[in-house]
Image (cartoon, rainbow, N blue to C red; front, side):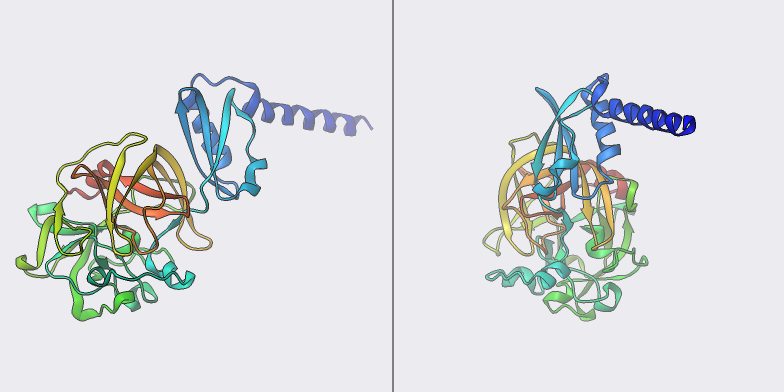
Length: 336
């Protein structure tokens, strides 16, 4: 009997410590509380991401669905929580477009062979390398290692297969992607480098990006140029910039062309699904309000007033996720 009472008391004591860690102790600042929130909430089912606001100080918890609201305490380390439902965030290669039966029209120029190559058009890897037909978006032609020029896009567009496994360096890059009829005869480059992505709750990722060296002639690519909304002319992206909440940003993508929308977050931590069972956590991400992207727009260059903000790489029905220019540039050794 005494052993049972002792066990109960120990259990109650442990639970009280656990509870105090979430709601009963004031963290020294909102950033410390946010870090704790990330540790306890991100591994849970239905949690899409974490962020915070300074005025007033509060922790933002992004959810995949309203049904997961009960997982979020009212306070964490003395700071109130605010719940926002954004949906399940997925890496948006065109394999998902095929599975989910989206339809689109009027963007023939972006989904066929385009020479010279520019940002905002269809790109991908061979069907046998990926494990099926696919396509994403060519981001930009940029200068990189050795002073040479490279194709920039997402890693999951030109450096991964359908199981979210990295492909060998030297894998062919096609324009257009195989979903749009691309074949080995449409080869424009070879995978040169990518930023590694670590999957699971312990991974700390900042960018989904890769570059391919260019195998076509100089007359067949335009440096820093992006296909405009008329699908004929181009605009230039040069240099980089930071953004603030409420700023308008622009993207040019394979599926939805040129779109403009507002920034809703500039430092979000987001759980991104690459397959039905494989996800990765990305820190310090930009969130943009929908409508902005759809499946197949992964890799789209995002700019503000002609300066590079980052690459679109994931999204849900309510939000688009953009990895920042500074992590892409430092991770790949490129200039815009």
